[in-house]
Length: 177
Length: 313
Image (cartoon, rainbow over all chains, first blue to last red; front, side, top):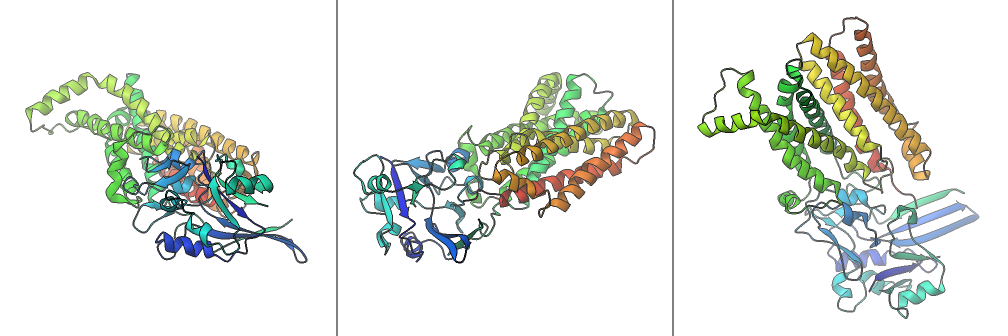
């Protein structure tokens, strides 16, 4: 089993519903967020192209945050989901430095926090909060190892990319372009 | 084509707009670690070479700075932890993939050893010193008998400690300025140079100072070579590497780097040391102080600048 997410950059309107859903679902402290919207603008008017992306932890296969963690607090569970064990985290910040996506932050309570792929929902068979609320249905989530899953089909039918592939992290958030 | 990037809905403390998760404590910790490694390296080196008599400050007095430096350094590291009450978790596991883990373990061994090293010279240097308990006399005798073994262990650990202060940064692929293999050796040499400068400042023997000053000159030259190497390597690298190097070549760290690190911290003290070799009388405090300051500024700049470099996408 390998969980992954795909986001259709042509359908995303950047409404930030995924951000709010995540903050509500996961009790993210005020002023913090586990996912966010990035807008890149290429060129200038009238020849301009905009790409909207909902970004979060990429749950990398070759995750630098897990490698550099001195206590083993950052770890990978079934499905390739990268999680942080609060009771093991000393808040040294090494994983925050190591993430090419700046997806981690220091929680006000001290430990390091980030997207969990809503592991508590996914293990029950539900979809992550961000995916479930998306009003344009531009997000796909599922098991890459299952060729008939929603995500496998989305990636089969569309050209896609990952962020900073040159970082060698093998990220698992895909962007349909 | 011009590309602009907007990130909306995100203003996380210490992360946006630039990453700043490591504060002033970390460069001080790296500095003190390097300084301690430098002092211990030369103390054990001259013990192994059997030149204690010639180099009393290097072998005996200099190491008195080390336990304090290491304890203060570890305290700085502790201060910058965000989940402080869980710090002991660091010592519940060994993770070789994580430089911070094995660095913490090296400190765990070298800190007590530095206390033992200093304690073994207490009675020789302070004639009025007396151990209160009998077993301490026995331990002292055993340590003095095995000093050579201890010197070999310490020289090995000191090199690891010195390199570790650089590898701690260079292991982060996500921070292009740090992510080069020369940073470990560079921090080691820089730490050795500050260690030698500290001992040189303490030394009262003219002969010893002369030897130390020559060692220091050599270390400075190696350091300059490594820094050149680092910048050239970055300029020959990918776009993120070039952007990282540009922080020192016209970017916001240009003045602090070239003035405080290169000129005042390396070139000027090196010139003074060369002049001294030719017989000019230069007060030792000037080059020693400049080298110590340059090393500290260098670590501050590297930690600050490294955090703002990142991948572009």
